Image (cartoon, rainbow, N blue to C red; front, side):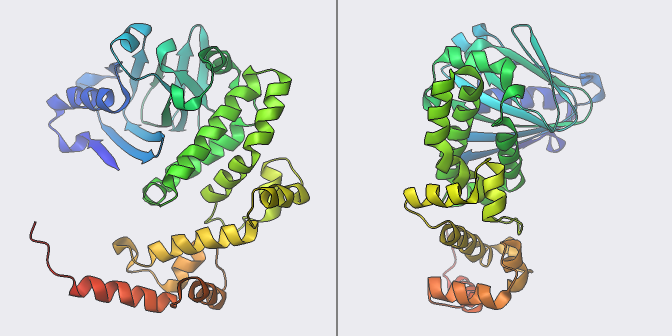
Amino acid sequence: MLVLDTQDLPAADRIEAFHAVAVGESGSCSVEQEQPEAGIRKKLEVWNFGPLTLFATGGTGMRIWRTPRHARFDSMNTVSIITQSQGTGAFTWNGHQQRVGPDALALAHKTAGYEYAWSGAGLSVAFMVDTERLGLPEHLVRTAIPLLKQSNVAPLLLDHLRSLHRRADQLSADPGAEALGSATLELTRALILSVAADERTRRSVAEDTLLTRVLAYVRAHLTDPRLTPHSIAAAHNISVRTLYRLCEQGGLSLEKWIVRRRLEGARRDLTTPENTHRTIEAIARSWGFANPAHFSRRFHQTYGVTPRQWRRLHYDAAAFSPPDHH
């Protein structure tokens, strides 16, 4: 959801407006814009996923920093995961310096203070969660900050974050948005523990969160036609047999779970205004259904109407609904 686009504002008001929105959305901070005399350009989008808030901040270069002093003036104690989708970010914390590109993650703990910057045109994508919701001792979070490169969970969380951002409008409006946020939280917990905890704790957490991580991965890749049990298992370094056993222990059938989530997505897209120009077949294909007849049959079995009937019913209802006088 778009929160700010400075293109809509007079040049003289842009710096102040961005700072006000940045503080309002993510808490107390200091911001310095690169070449402010040349006129800044900023676009900020924010989406909510239950316990988690996703941010996309794009535009001209900037530096943002938070210190323990900022934290004292702020009730928010948060942990953030940051990546740079465009340009190269620079993350600094307690002597640790890190370049952050599209293939890297940075971990920021608000009360510990940090600095993040980029030069030229850039796009930073990050999510933020309350430290209490993370449920980990603060010393473990801080221990993990300089060690993320060593984690086997980092590529998985990075891929997940990219997928979340790519389809953020769609996913944040989905009934499963809160569950997706909780799953992302589990991935973040696993990331931190994978580099900051002892071997026994790491193994225990990895086992406890595996199904959550698998389902988060599947949900984020539902529209990928290459999503298969083999690709899911490979992404989590487990065998297909282990994957099926894990799902069985969790009381679900993997194939049925995937088909149901894809049907839910297609059902929603069939009635949204931005998809009125798309054919039923195109929408089905975008949700991984290569065979239109198979899609229509599964849709009818699940919802009691064909995709065409569902679409017509919805638009007929919209056409005859009374005008809104509010």
